[in-house]
Image (cartoon, rainbow, N blue to C red):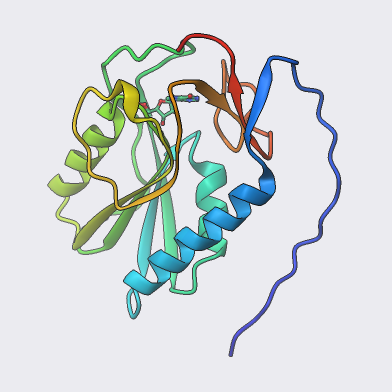
Length: 190
Ligand code: IMP
């Protein structure tokens, strides 16, 4: 039996600085997330997907993605550090919070907010493979290929963006602006 849900809509007014430029509206995002979820649901028919979200940025995307899947899904989060509160990657990735549950023999999808240098994803991918997952794919809401330091192959990409720092929909600048329902470019060098 299928169940349809209708989420209540309401207007929100958040004051944002003038130099923020909208890249993707909440409507753009909702439509794209549905498309990715359809793709994932098709690819994983008959399976249960285990979504691994990378804190904190991917939490918003993961929760929307999961609610649009038609295959059974479980999820877990881990946290790594590479940036601190700066917009420049230090190039060093370390595990801050590990997963709660084992991933061995599970069909894992790594869910990221944005791929920049690729160092974070590379680290998590190697960590997951060392734990003998049954299968592994990688999904990111945003891809910014301009500053890649390591090669990473993505299976699902929401939007590819130019070289500008972005906030909103889970992504922050100095821990702020994660709550914005759209994606905004900040006019400053990354
Ligand atoms: P990477 O290891 O360089 O690919 O960096 C990935 C992480 O850096 C992402 O998961 C984000 O948390 C953070 N990050 C990179 N670019 C941005 C951005 O434009 N806005 C907010 N966070 C970013």
